[in-house]
Image (tube, rainbow, N blue to C red):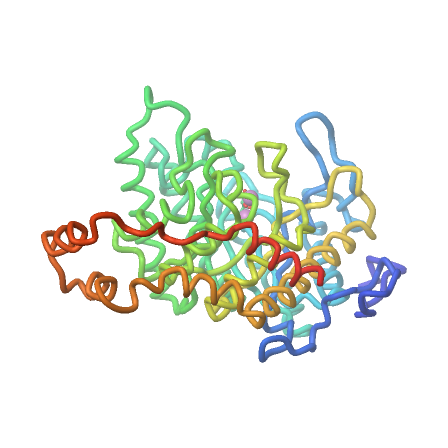
Length: 439
Ligand code: XLS
Ligand code: NI
Ligand code: NI
């Protein structure tokens, strides 16, 4: 197959002083940081849908970028051209993983049997390219939100027939994920939510989503899927209320239905901020529950109330993200999937590369700065010190559970009035972060 991205070679690492737009300034794959090479800390993935399918269309205008890769869109020839383009792209960037939905990799047919045949054909091609290049599958998923049949959701649909179609797609997507050796399987509950309680039985819908997930776990484990299932929380868009609002909500749901052993979180930065949290918040909630699985690496625009899926550029955010990831000991079966797209006016081939160079460099910087923050020790030291009253005396008794409410009240009565709990020193700590970032 002829080269698709002509004139763009392998992207080299040239260091922070380089002004070459087609070079990494910070992402130096083999550089060892906190005990292992950057590429091991940062298993980056390409999202098939944004990178190879989306051409910048929005509700006010058609596509600006040509993602035909020399073939007519909507054909299997095009599906195959995307495979070639995708692998050439990943190789040139040194990206080691990809993520996909079923309908990203083939055009959906009217008959599910024909769609499945196409999926078998295309995954043979993908597998061939994987073997040739060493590139791997991070996770697979089924798109259960674009087709009109899913207008009321998939697992949460009011229609049992639609539930069966959702089940069929999940089954096939699991087959494909296993065929491609994927490390994870994602449930992003696109339309699993509701617009109005006037037509919705929330309790029933949530139970049904859990049923679909349970069926998926049973089937997946049966065909040898040993990776993680992931829930990707998002509070809204396309639905007004989405059931997997944020990490805390999704974790509660998993525990309620006994799914917590098989599932972890796939945290997307832009979804966390849509939920009114920071990215770091949802990472922390996941990590402290042992459920930090994977990351959809993007960023939103805080002035806009929707999922803009921008390539990450904010080093403060990626530093805090990598701080959480380092503290959690890394992502076992997860990675950093660039669920991100170029802005509509960035429509050239080079722009596709620039998006990833920006994203990878921003995470590399985040990793370097997070490692420096931990090494510096002032933040961790302050937090430890802040809770020191629980290390001995009455505090230690509270922690061990070896105390009654009456004893605590007696203790308080004896003190008469407590000392203030100590300054939170937020402004000082923020300046410590700045000094690590820019010092
Ligand atoms: C949409 C989601 C989606 C998932 C995969 O907002 O981010 O792209 O990552 O279905
Ligand atoms: Ni996502
Ligand atoms: Ni998203």
